[in-house]
Amino acid sequence: MRNSLLNKLRERKNLQVALDFININDAIKVAKQAIEGGAEIIEDGTPLIKSAGIQGLLKLDEIANEKILLADTKTADAGDIEVEIAKRGNAKIMTVLGIMDDSTIESAVNKAKELDILVQADLINVKDTIQRAKELHDIGVDIIGFHVGLDVQKKRNITVASLKEEIKEISKFTIVSVAGGLNASNIKDLLDIPINIYVVGGAITRSNNPYEATKEIVNVINTSYK
Image 1: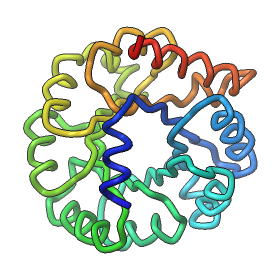
Image 2 (image 1 turned 180 degrees about the vertical axis):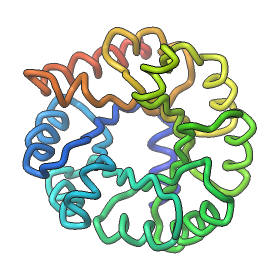
Image 3 (image 1 turned 90 degrees about the vertical axis):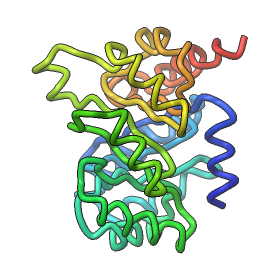
C-alpha cells in the first residue's frame, strides 16, 4: 500500500482539506461536501484527534471511500505509539513534528513501515527548513510538510507564498505538502512549483458552501495540467 500511495501522491497535485474542528459531526458535514467537491485527502486535524480520538478517525474513514485519510497527530514523542493510533483509525498518513529528536522520527518511521502507512514530517517552527528536510528524508520520512502556522503568519506577516525558493529546493528530493492560509487565490501563485499536496483549512471549513469552495480550489489546481 505504501508504494502505491506514494506513487499516487507523486502523479498529480492533490487537495487536502484540514478539518480542524472539535465536534466530529461538524467535521463529517464538511468532509462530505469536500469529498464531493473533489478533495483527495481528508485530514483529521490535531484539535479533532484530541477531541474525538480513534473513533473520530473511524467515522471519517467511513465516508472517505477511496480518498486518503490523514491523521494530523503532530507527534512530539512516542512516535511508534502514535503511528499505531493512526493505523487503528484507518489513517493512511500520520504526521510528526520535524523539529523533534531524530529518535522520535525514527520510531515513527520504523513502525509506519511495519504497519504499512506513511509518515509526514511537519516543518512548523523549523529554522533551517532545507537542511532539516534533507535530514528527515534520510531518516525515511515519506512526505515533508512545509507549514507556516497561523500564529507565525500573524506575527511575522509572511505566507507560504513568501517562501517559494525554500519550497522549490525541498521539492527536488521529496514529496512536498504545503499549508498555511491557502485559498483559491494564493494557490495560483504556487502552481509553478512541484508541490504535491495543497492543504486548505479555513477557506473551505469556514465557507458558507464548502462544496463550492472545494470545487473552486480543485479547478484552480487542475489548471496546472492545461
